[in-house]
Image 1 (cartoon, one colour):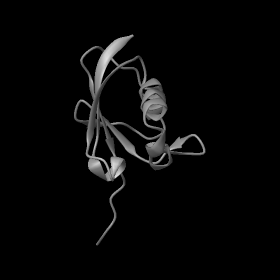
Image 2: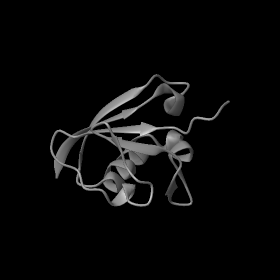
Image 3: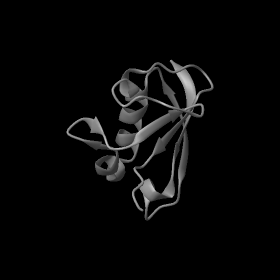
Length: 88
């Protein structure tokens, strides 16, 4: 397993402030599971019926939704959880 940094913006963690966590994970799914286990109050903002409600950005590159949860992680990676944005 590898130490990675996970960043969650305040829009996902409200009313708390943004979170930056150091986790030991091998896949994005593993990281999501650890975030949900440690912060169950934000689970409904991250997943619905086992599918992500957020996008994942790994080291500045947005992951394809169909592959995101299976994506492997390496030591030192930064994984950002990005909520959907709408507007016009």
